[in-house]
Amino acid sequence: MGDTRVVLVNGARQSGKRTLVRLLAKERMAEWRSLDTPVVRQAAQEDPAGFVAFPDLMVIDEIQRVPELMLSIKEQADADPRPGRFLLTGSARVLGLRKPGRAAS
Image 1: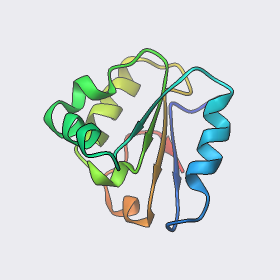
Image 2 (image 1 turned 45 degrees about the horizontal axis):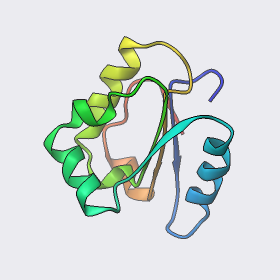
Image 3 (image 1 turned 120 degrees about the vertical axis):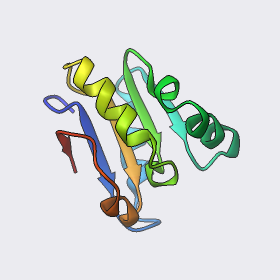
């Protein structure tokens, strides 16, 4: 998080990804958005660019549920070079999605 704009924590279901990310985000002022929640997922699908427009750390849980967000995350990360912009979680299916440029996993 200290030197990377986008960090992806991926792995199998029930492997502790969300717990780890909660611990990391707790140390910083973070906006938490879970794509498991239908209304949040709908907002992400309808306006991906607006959904990720946030000036500080944004945690997006279960990123594989809305793959359209990846391009908007890339655009935000390219426009703002500060490290620690996005912390993403997702199941192993994330590996099949197009990752944002310069994402660490």
